[in-house]
Image (cartoon, rainbow, N blue to C red; front, side):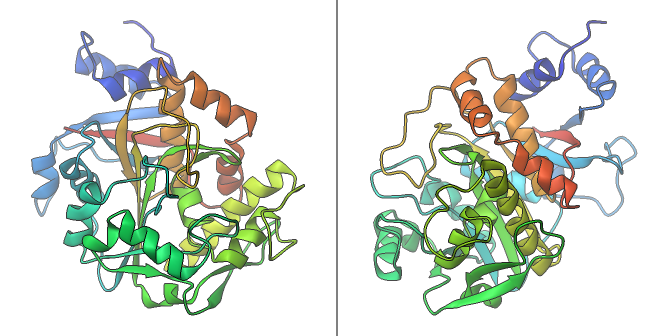
Length: 349
């Protein structure tokens, strides 16, 4: 039997097995300690789970975080990725997306996310930025949400419109608190719905960035960028690893506050090296890959990074990640007890 590298395995998972028999791929994955593909599960099985698991249904290993993957990057695929998690969001549900800086158009589109948001009876949430542009005050940010079509599909809440609240961070190296919009207290469940892509400062942005920088208020964003040293600006002069570690710590603060009531989803399309916060992002130079979901934010971001490395056309995004030491956010998150970089990929058919 041919032995496959981690990158080869991930590439086959992303684009299909081709001429490789599924049994052979499963066997190869099971011998690779870095990543495992349990099996292919159908969307019908996810939508209609039985009371007792079928003996042939694969069950995740206790020491690996399950990450679900679908290559169907559609509204239906997004719903399947959420349903695969086997949880039910209840109460007031916040759906954190990136509103997108005007001029850019790679952010997750309202028509794409609408069926999921509507099923959740969710509110789309955002916070104001700590830099220029048209999203640094509530009135202009709300107008962006109107212009980009988000208010047409669901209620929108700029969470720091009426002030801020402080969330304690336990075990942080740089931060003791995460300052977020005061409206965050109104929500019982969070769906962290991220557009996975590159980032000019962090190397890449996935669910960890979406819940750290993304949920922080203007003051909170500055604290993260400056590694706790300033409540204004974007931390010019902050050591890169300190900034990445602060993002991980802020994300942990959000997760601790929500006490497990979070679902994490990364959409790997329009894979620019730049963030949606830029009004003129670089065009993507690689193909779309998949939608991934998990209850472990570190695992799902790690899986997305691995898939970028596995892609034949991922060179530009790999360079962006490596030039910013982007992987360090995952290293630090795992080191402070927030998530698992070892995971199992479960492909949703």
